[in-house]
Amino acid sequence: MQDRTVRYRGLTRLPPIVGVTLVGFMAGSMLVGCTSTADSPVTIFADPGQYQYFNCEQLVGQRKYWTGREQEIKQLMDKAGQDAGGAIVNVLAYQADHVAATEQVKLIEAATRSKNCETPASWRSNSAVR
Image 1 (cartoon, rainbow, N blue to C red):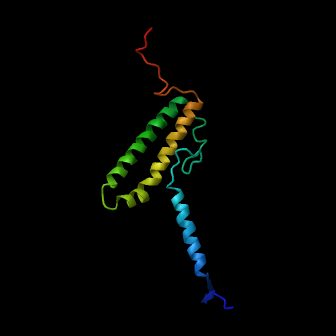
Image 2: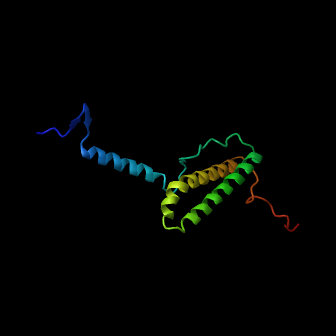
Image 3: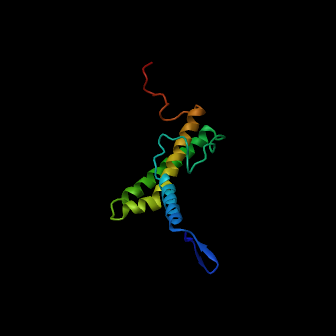
């Protein structure tokens, strides 16, 4: 049987099947970042323990920043989506930032719930009948 490796100036080239397998693995690993993380407790871009030692006031400030950042990126994605190559621009430029901002907001909301901080959803109405 003939050896399929080719020697070129002292270097060994791998068989073509190894290159194809490697490219397929790399493409699959990049597509993992495009999946939805809505129900997944695993975060790719955010540290789950990041807000562990924040107090309620700090969490409110962080939530305000990250929700604003998330909305800003969403607007940029919508604007880029109107152009011919917008889908490519969204994936290359904005998708990772949008996922990171979304994960940060989810972590902040989880930390807020675990610390029993008051949120707009838990505020009591001032117009309650007494």
